[in-house]
Length: 376
Image (cartoon, rainbow, N blue to C red; front, side, top):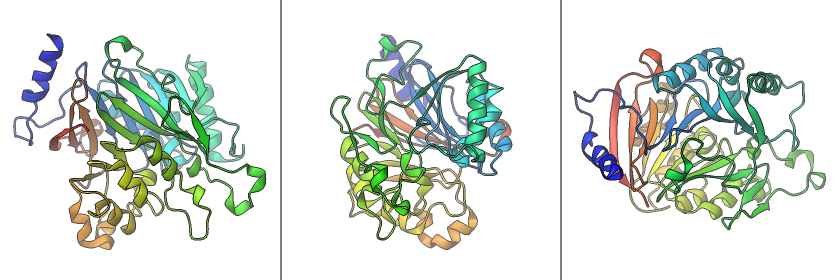
């Protein structure tokens, strides 16, 4: 009976289009999975609220290197969303536009577990300022009671629902990729796609972006993928294994929603990746005038890669970017705002809400509601 009531609320309380009486994002309800891609203008940050209320922050970037302004914006948004504790904080890789705001968050919210790609494989030098600040964040979080774990690729039992896991058995998180290790799509098996480091020339060694963590969120029939800055189109003359997207696409296949890798910059969203996922919704976590590149947006919109609808939601499209891209920019479904994917109880359908990032507390008026989309 409770499930029927939840579905009824989902179907009838949320209109298909924005109405004057429905001007802000409704609060999260038990049984709903939410994925919030934040628009801070300085880097990547995403909030996940699982059906039982478990919370996870994926990245907290600040483009200025120090991240204080972005950290305040993220913390304000979390407060606005009713998040009083982060059960998980996951860092996809050690770049400032993904990590620099973490220090300013740790003092404002209790954190349960911190997960990153580990400190052994291609560890950044201790003189790297971003890595130095991140290690300070990690030390401070552990001093306040947080635990630390490196990612375990292939597993679906590391990031789990902590409040009522038994009530939502179809919700899970699969650790798909990190450090050149990729899930094969079978059980917990993984394969290493990077050659041994001692066999590579200096110019062919994996970059920090290539080591990004990739995650698949699943709830019933619904799937979402987010993969940090992993590349899909190697530089001219580079070895093909540098397309991390290729191995990831083979593992995860068709996916309802995915977050564009590397902010839609030059090297992600390869043809093979897009054709394998066939996502109906693509979230473009843009913050720089270089996001997205013209070629990437062209591939995203190409009808010959896969048929059917695809709606692209950008967190921030700068005017100069729009001018350089030209008319193709008008095909974006939205060009700024926090992008919130709200999955119905059980995962059969979902909607996308776009929230103005310019409001008080970092979350203003509702700019649009899209869907419902049917999970596949």
